[in-house]
Image 1 (cartoon, rainbow, N blue to C red):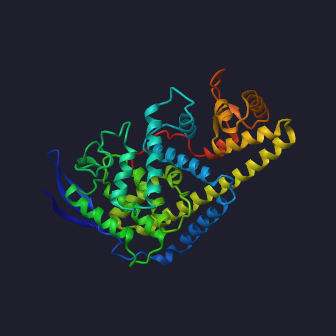
Image 2: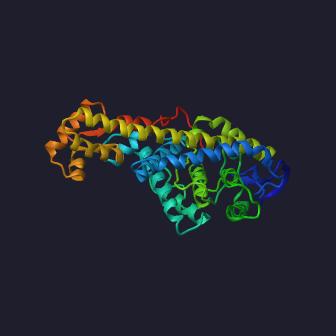
Image 3: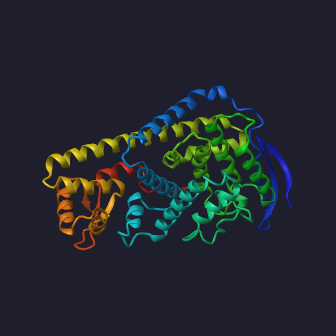
Length: 395
């Protein structure tokens, strides 16, 4: 049985028994915070974040294959978000796995990243018919843990046992989320806040609050961090702040994860919402600017490579057709290109050899048969920041 033991900062601790030992679990109050957020102090970082998102919206319209850039950027986020949880797959691993091009990789890691892609795309598609809700979160969680190491952690279900963050058991944990007797009320309050309109808070501010509340409630046994990061993008899409789901914070959080965990804990202990929101908005601005810069460089790369092919190749027509397909899928086999372009196998092979000579594509397997070619300069831009972490922290 749970007993309130003390109030501290913005929330309260309750005493609950886990495995025969008494622990103090934290229960956050409903949003918005009782102490009003100093929005005046947020105006500058909020303005910078909103302008960065506007610029990102603009560059996307210049990309020749907008939907395919989104397709690849979603995969970059899946890799980064999964790395924070401990996987060691790089973006190239996932893309080559999806091309059925590579064997012998740490298959559990790649499967987990692939599951994240599936959960993310499912959530984005379902938003057209279903509001951002606890039901949608459970459905995404089911897909996230549908196979691999998480499939024994109650996919698609909110937890029915106590979990904790840090430490070897709840008694020595860094943080213990609400007990299950309190968790359902916390989740109901969070869902109501997602849809309320009376607070009139800017959408980016609300997104920052929602993320912390979900992380603090920690409602699933595995995957809280990945779902919690995804909720930010889904919420901003439903609010019309993002026209395309291109804002993903995992690269920023990966680079600043110690500060991220510290600020989450300070919100819980001290109600330090402004410090967290300044960090969150800085992350939005930095992430949007990085995506804008990557989009700009990709537009320039595609144009310069096409000009280079036109000037330097005697097979410019067929090579430009092949280059167009590499813009859409940066790893391809010769057989796939034959199917997609309707060019003959000798023509495709000759064009690939020329594109390799020009430094536009590379053969990545070292094999004589079943060779795979990668659009290396494009992959280099997409892959920035996706090197696996040396030691990840669970979120």
